[in-house]
Length: 297
Image (cartoon, rainbow, N blue to C red; front, side, top):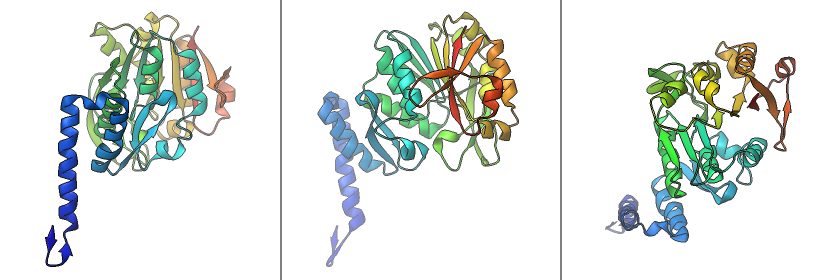
């Protein structure tokens, strides 16, 4: 580390990294990091030292969340709250003991929030196909000691198999099965439909589903007809982005008609957490991305 009057900076860094890495393994094996203070110190100073491209924040209900240092979530998340209106609506409408499905979970903002809201009696099923996002999603579940979550590294659509996941060069939360002009790189990921997933497992049907799939919403809805039919009082939160829909060749009319054919009352989520009924013609006037709250009639 010291050579002829010069300091080997890389050697020092490797030495510090080695010590912290060994300390991290000791904490993990001894489960000493289950203590809230040690847990926060461990992740904030040891884990982040090893991962320079992420940062640790505190969100709603004192939830710790790793997010990418660069990206839309980090830039827009204020006071620990992402999409304030949607967050407030979820806090008000998701009940203890319910089953919540997060389609397009990203790094787990809504997954971890929903986990705390439904409690130990409830269940969360989170789908995230991107391997980097999935890794951070699992880490966020671990840091918060959440035990009611099933994580699936696959995408939801209307069929089962393998498909291309088109990667956004701008934001890790904007990858999609639907190709758009800005998405030129892709990876291959496992895909399934929600109907197939629940039909092949002994799980309670969902009470609440969040869909954020960047233009692939129609395919997701097409693949969950049985789930919708058999789920009483089902509620959906779904992103509506007219620009992305247009870019992927899906008309807002088809999406709106599909929701109505399933018997959903479509509402627009407001900034204060309320939701107001919206007509198709009113929806066409919206030019920016918003979130819809859909109640099964």
